[in-house]
Image (cartoon, rainbow, N blue to C red; front, top):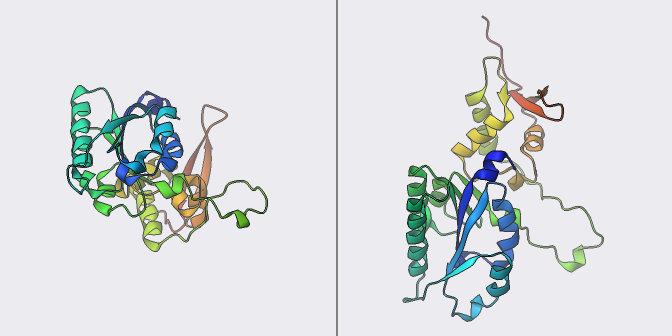
Amino acid sequence: MSTQAENLKLAVLIDSDNVSYAYVKPMLEEIARYGTPTIKRIYGDWTQPESTGWKNVLLENAITPIQQYRYTSGKNSTDSTLIIDAMDILYTERVGGFCIVSSDSDFTRLATRLREAGMLVIGIGEEKTPSPFIAACDRFVFLEIIAPKPEPEEEKKKPEPQQLRRTKVPKEIRQLVRNSVNDVADEDGWAFLGDVGNMILRKNPAFDSRNYGYSKLTNFIKSLGMFEVDKRDTSNRGIKHIYIRDVNFVQSDK
């Protein structure tokens, strides 16, 4: 984690109607990559029988349950309580970012408003999450990626290192990467990989190399076969900066 991420205080607000308690531990580990969760709240009707599984999970992870009775058959009351709390937290100026855990498009306007106020907004939800909510966040992480479902027992013949499932990279994602490289490249066509990653996320908050089976962006870029890769020394012997260039780049005459 970078020093900047270590110093970033986050408010984690969870819609219990849209997440299973089985996701909580890996979800909090993922959130720790972006900052320190100083406020952790989860919203739901804890009088319902299906909420019993949450008790130990909330205690173990110091998450504060916020009770919201279901006045109607819908769940809008829970959403409204989360949104009101988010705005209260925003005006106290105690955090630098929010993590909204839900697959519900009802939080699209909230995410937009928080970003307008200069907050970092990270969304976490299932792959079924509507695109407007995803686009409203600075970054969106799919629960299926950070906590893959376990394989059936009959398929577990012997222990193996955990690997992400490789999937084909769509044409539009390949083009997104290529355009992002060209957007931040210098006159010689070289682009710093960190800048490329940031540009990709600005255009597509749901982009994550893990969606395609690669834990690191560097390995994902290499797998595309579209770019030259140059590792450059820095003042720190243990750190190298990675630059990439489109293999089709043509140096213009000066």
